[in-house]
Image (cartoon, rainbow over all chains, first blue to last red; front, side, top):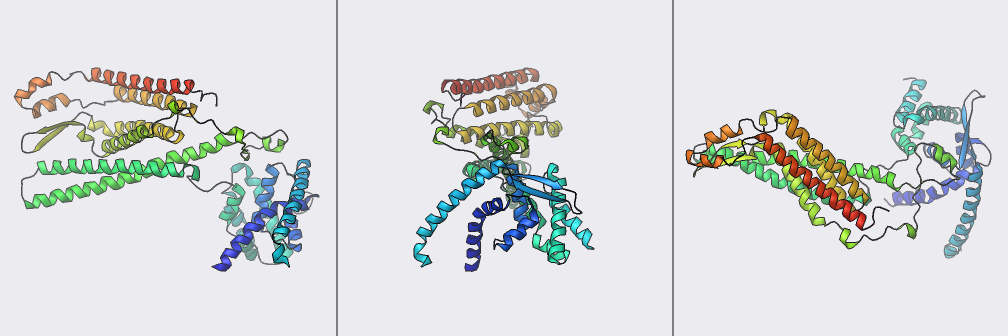
Length: 112
Length: 359
């Protein structure tokens, strides 16, 4: 029970950071599964069934653009940040830094 | 089942649950994802699909919609209207059980057995009517509120800003409602407030009326009490044609119920109430004309049945009844039209006067 609660809280905590994680890696074109792997290497695990719908949503919101590469044997959909996505990303990073500084202050006692 | 078949089935289970226009692309997307995962991790298709999880859940994330019928914004009102409707159903179930009990009682000789029968009859009717009515009331009220819930989503969507060009292109753009204190609607003028009690009374009466029409239409007619028991009831409606009449009747009441719920939810005269009032009253007038003018609405033998039931000395009173059902229909239509005009008129007057139309 306690473990479930911790899991829930953790996934809620992660959920807010996912978009920033995804945006951070899409300065250059990447396809969905490559993104899953990159993020995993960096210690951020994201399920494909969360990432794929998220990519579509971000595209619909104008933050990402996509292109099908059908030249290869396997057709793949590549995503990349748009100019608007760049602006939003920059702003989000700024906010993230402020937030994490503030959080560090708040949690200062725990970190020692 | 071979692996390709399994993949095909999995993808189908996902795409059948997402909007038509996105299916083809999601299918390609999933196909290449599954291929990548299989070749990269060198695990069986089954394990890959297991990892991707329930296709229904996957599709739900693609749809990105809320999965509730009635949201928190409407929930309180929904529960409340439901209670009112159930109250109405309860009352009408008791009335119809009494009618049916009296009917059974008047057709029987006295005795203890018949008292038992009477009670059995009463409770059978009570439960039959009660349960049927309960289910329809819950269904109808839920339907009305579910429609509101969906419509409200559209009402509150704020138009995307200029640089959201991709958003404008997409058909079902989901935009976030941007809220500022300036967008707060003005507090309605006290004189524009619709009395909740008016709507409550209407809702309860509409429900009772609908349930009675549905379960015991014969009570809308003439009862005769000869001092010891009730005898034949002469119904004013044409019960032989009832199956053609009742659906229209109920649609009309349903429309009226929706109108009252709009009033109850908005709480004051504004353009939503005005439009709802115009539309609902127009529908009701059309249905009334249809029922009274084009369908065999009245019991054709009402008068003759009544005469056979009544004693000779009361027959004089019958002269006062208008013999021509056409005239009755016209009078009723006139009343309905006047009432509708009055209702729309009040809504229009109050909406314009208290400036809610410009909102």
